[in-house]
Image (cartoon, rainbow, N blue to C red; front, top):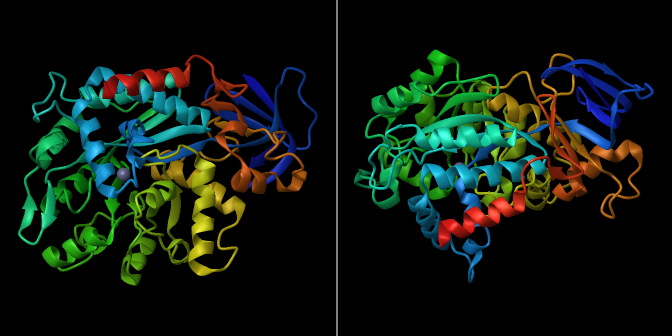
Length: 445
Ligand SMILES: [Zn+2]
């Protein structure tokens, strides 16, 4: 039994003061607001938020940071380097890199990551002796860091979609494909969920998976009530290719094979039609926006207001890890909207916080996480309000300060499933900068 005393905390969506939060094992068993600190309580000055969910990650993209901005950093600079990194990974160096990346996420307040995982096999496409060696490396890395993970094992079969149809995978893409959806399903069936690790499914995109193969993934996820994610309409070219080949948009194609449900998350969903938005809203789907990546890649700005008006929940991911900062993702949703609409005030700070917390956990299959409330997992991310960035914040605007002005340097404590993994702004067992430096240097040496 552990009690944390929070100077301020967001309890079930409301900012409260002087809050004792008691947890027994991994779950919150009592929350008392406006109460003096328990004598045994561990003190958390500042504002304590529910742990963040990073709902869309490709861990290895972290190795590209800075390198892909060379010269003027075109899309092709990015994609060529991404494939170079993908070709050099093996289960050992991927484990080391993922430890650094997930630990950076932990320092950024993350209690759970959704890893959209598609580098399955050895260079050339031959499976490792353990066909899930790469997935196991990611699961082990998350466990070592102390955050939960939903491994979104991704079906990727084709090298692209053009006027002539689906292309064969080439170069690094040969590592991504299982050859068939049935082989994918058999491999994924041997991955085990635990109390802190879940297995979900993903369709890479309409460019990489044909509709018949998509159906196998949809059925696999439905039988297991598992989360199902897909990259959707990130760039206009994908919509054009899909319309030309299938006669409909990517969302309409996914709807036609029964992929859309409350377990479905469309990642990006930047370029949607009105009909696409109705499809997503009517089934209670989630859209995972990744605004810092989308602006880095020049993708465009997604329709956040029509989506939320239609009943779609928004979650957030750092995707290519141009930066890892969930509050930066949250504020970018609102800031992009202001730039596009020339109007302030589309989403409140609490609504943006929900995208980073409860909506993200839900899209990863953790309905018991993302809120500070009795029965929820004890995930607590604490932001100090005493730095030069946040000094002068009135207590009633602590959430606005966190969402609109904090950086990851302001995060002092992170508790995941009742265990404190970050204290005084440092991971308790990992030298994160050292791990990232070492593993990225080795990858490109
Ligand atoms: Zn992605």
